[in-house]
Image (cartoon, rainbow, N blue to C red; front, side, top):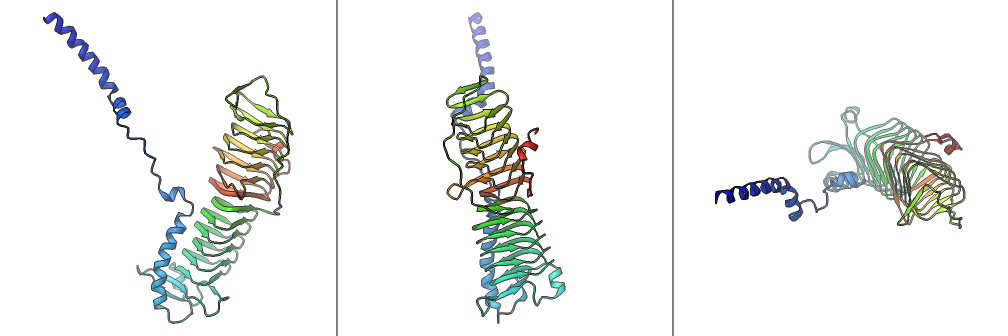
Length: 373
């Protein structure tokens, strides 16, 4: 009997050790805990999160400030938590514009006042608003101003060389003058216009105009001859798989998705109707991309290129003069470490430059100067 039990026990112990090692995987298979969506804070996903939150705070505080107001003259008072605020009540005349910090003592301004104006607001040159600013109308600033954060119910226009340290959100159109800096987030429910030299990180609007002049350019959807796949291209399930580089001749088109391990060069006036994934993309002038464009290294788009889908790159993206990304009917996104955009660029949607974006005049033959990238 002992001779029979011993092998059985050995087998059971051996199986037990194997099962013990597999137990976590078996448990996860039959009682999965990772099937729910990953929870991401709203502040990380919604570019307008801070503006929306501040609007709720403003609505509550304005009720208190209105109750205290005895006339329409701006004055320094306090919020519910005791912090200082420069408050401009609604004016008697609808077209009246308040001048920020008018009537405030210099020591009050120096200690940092929240700004709340129920009318349109004008900020003089070199002014510093070191706490949040709200206006129930429009905002116009002089040059060299510094703001912590801005919430405007209507339009907002920053003068040259202004700086926003955290965020700006406007209900109407938003514009920033030459050499201004928009740290953090800038969003508008209307159009957005950033002059040459403006630096930014994360911006969003239905229509973003970068530099000047702005021209109306229609996407050229004429029929282009189909490119014949070279010998080193593997075609599988409507995909072109390329181990190495690929050149798309000028004036030709590809209807399939294109996956390139190396550099993808797209000739002038060529079109790729499928999605693109590559290491480096160099697209010459007037190229068209109808779906997503993804790169692990760098992207360069020549003048007047059109991109309909999202643009994602782990390095830099360069947009030549008059490029178009997205449109009014189909907004999209650009995500990159750095973004350089020439004059006349129009983007419909959101741009996230994780380090920095800049609007700067670029060489006319941008793709030639970048061909060695």
